[in-house]
Length: 238
Ligand SMILES: Nc1ncnc2c1ncn2[C@@H]1O[C@H](COP(=O)(O)OP(=O)(O)O)[C@@H](O)[C@H]1O
Ligand SMILES: [Mg+2]
Image 1 (cartoon, rainbow, N blue to C red):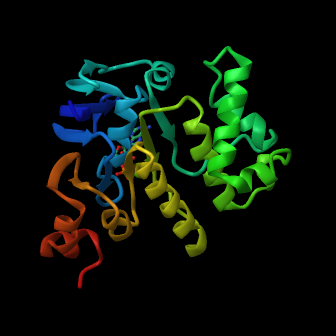
Image 2 (cartoon, rainbow, N blue to C red):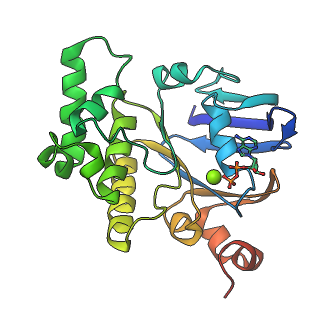
């Protein structure tokens, strides 16, 4: 079975305010899947629902064929779902290494934790060079690498990223996207939300355009990229 994540008829709410109205999505192994759509469409809410940060009111979410609807957030990390929140959130007073270690707080074996840190340093040599520095002193792009590295600490099967390129300089956007493709080639599966929709679709196996908490368009990244209406509505025309 190639299916890693399946979201069916998902309805989610913040208290009394319902935001998703029956969203469907699938993510297969080793795919990059992008969720695009205007501000407020519910993109972040979909991924927050997967990791238990939002109340799911109806519908189901399954991961590797197991129903994980309403999972506790720390359990999501334990079963192999890594999460990179929007805004490259790092603990700015803590060192690079300490930030990474926090990504494996569930791992009690310190030797395994050290191995995981080394593996992240292999992926991101830049973080290794700066491992003693306070995370707050890193550039925006380096902080995003650190946030991604932290999500890799538990050897996830799926990494979910919320707006990984937001606010980064073009050079770092290139770097982060290259890294995402590299992670995919290593067998990792990625689900991301992106404002930078054209860029995201270019490297996506599958894309979902959301509107007002519902599915609007679904297709391969290429299909969405060349779709006239998608271009007009989500990719700034032309
Ligand atoms: N914590 C929250 N409490 C109440 N409403 C929220 C909260 N977070 C998001 N919303 C609302 O949910 C809707 C979808 O938000 P979100 O999923 O963040 O959209 P997107 O990521 O597509 O920009 C928006 O109308 C937003 O105002
Ligand atoms: Mg969002």
